[in-house]
Image 1 (cartoon, rainbow, N blue to C red):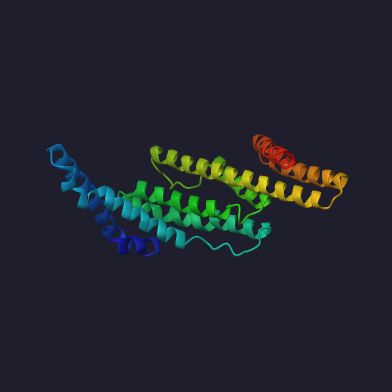
Image 2 (cartoon, helix red, strand yellow):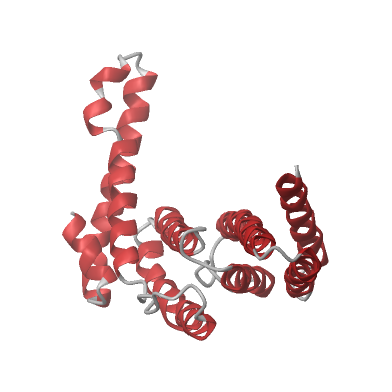
Length: 250
């Protein structure tokens, strides 16, 4: 069953539509049978071994594995390389997401569009969350990912197959909101970390006037960079930076 799914994602195309439809029909049949068993008063344990929830979960896991393997690799080990990151985000937007959208038609015809869409969201969300982890990216890089997420949210063309029913569109919006919020969380954590490091290095020099100027410059640069993306984000960056300054001075 999962071999068929993998071959469709690998680009084998319409020739596998019929086998893929059989996967969808199997899940539909299992769901119907489960409802009949539960409606007849049978114990839940009697159907747990073939419940469609288990099948659907397995399908989602397989889809996520296939999709994650197709994400273009981010080819930079530097946490200051913004050019490589811009190229990577462009690849996601122009190559990876359109390829998922193209294949979504087969899953829609097979009655598996909701599961497919959910798996798309999970693979991309996990990838971007890993990228913006505080141990990997700088503040400016996290800001680039945040800005990209906002742009994709505003465009209303990302993460949803064409002619998707309205209820699937809301799932895509939820995914983008999650990506933006998670990136913001990592962005603020990186800002706090970088300001704390700057404070320590500046005051270790033993020259308070120079230290003050250096810290003020760092705070200003971060707030101005965030303001160019979002005024509310700039306010949040300012707040965490000031909190870190106060914590350092205690």
